[in-house]
Amino acid sequence: MSAMSISWLTWVASSLSSDADVDLPTDLRSVFPPHLSIDAMWRTIHAFGARPVTASEGDCGLRDESTEHADLFSITERGLFRLRALADGDNIRDSVHASALRLMCTRGISAMDRRWALQLVSRMGIPYKTSNDTKVYDAQRELFE
Image 1 (cartoon, rainbow, N blue to C red):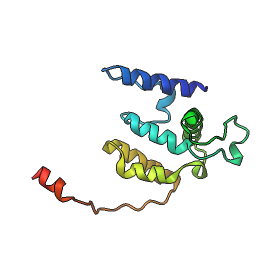
Image 2: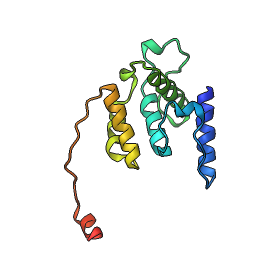
Image 3: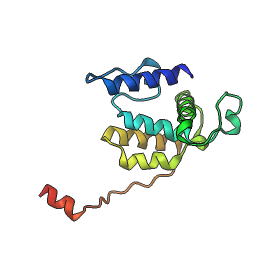
Image 4: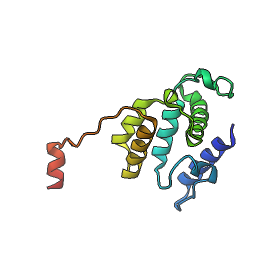
């Protein structure tokens, strides 16, 4: 396991088992902005790690495996590796699961999570159509009236 993966898993375990806020490790701060939810971080790692290893990554030691439950380790390793590459300025657009990022733009838990996804989509040049039309359902309207 890479040091970054160990940091990620240790931080998640600490965050989930503690009532207090646990600071994000330094090596992850260069990859994630502060105040993202754990859900947004995992969705980002998954979006960056779910696609198979590309030809340009062939020599970096990443394994190309399916997305079975047992292979979440590989997804985490690839996702964090690619996020680090993005932070270093590499063009990794073809390595990213674009539809997962687009989905996070509208279904992120918090406004910060959605802004983060929009920033990634914009930075990577992934086509995304924003809409100001918000569906309002009758049950939802009754709840707030």
